[in-house]
Length: 197
Ligand code: IMP
Image 1 (cartoon, helix red, strand yellow):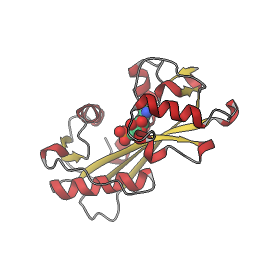
Image 2 (image 1 turned 90 degrees about the vertical axis):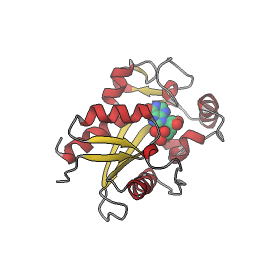
Image 3 (image 1 turned 45 degrees about the vertical axis):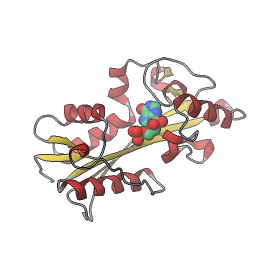
Image 4 (image 1 turned 180 degrees about the vertical axis):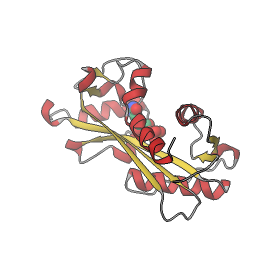
């Protein structure tokens, strides 16, 4: 089992750090990569797992600490997994509303039963920059893409993502409920198990 008292998170997002710290408890202190570098590595991988590993290695390199990175997005089956690793910039960086409009347009002729999709979260943890055995934890959240937006919570593709168990979109879930069942929650639960926490 991997034991450590400190790790660096390969993200400048303070909210993510807080969420993760709460989940991991007090035995591991999570530090932000912002303490060590402002430069973000180019995400040149073709998959979530490749990009998560690449970001974790970079964070370990600049900090000298074990490093954790996450990469997440939406994979739509009828689109061969798109927008996938390009989820954040699907509509060329024009933001969430444009991303959602582009997705609805791409699926306009696709019937309900073929609109299956999953949110994906891939976590990679490396002990050092050249670690040959990263810990990888993947969380998938299965759902379907709606024909129009519903709900006001969340971010990104939440208003278009229909959650079968909740019979509503993920933007209609209370934030605590989403954080309990989402792709990120699933990946983080696996990571906790792997770390024996
Ligand atoms: P990030 O790598 O976690 O910043 O997420 C990449 C992109 O995937 C986001 O900008 C969103 O477009 C999409 N995404 C990831 N997770 C979620 C989610 O929980 N809800 C909605 N969209 C998400």
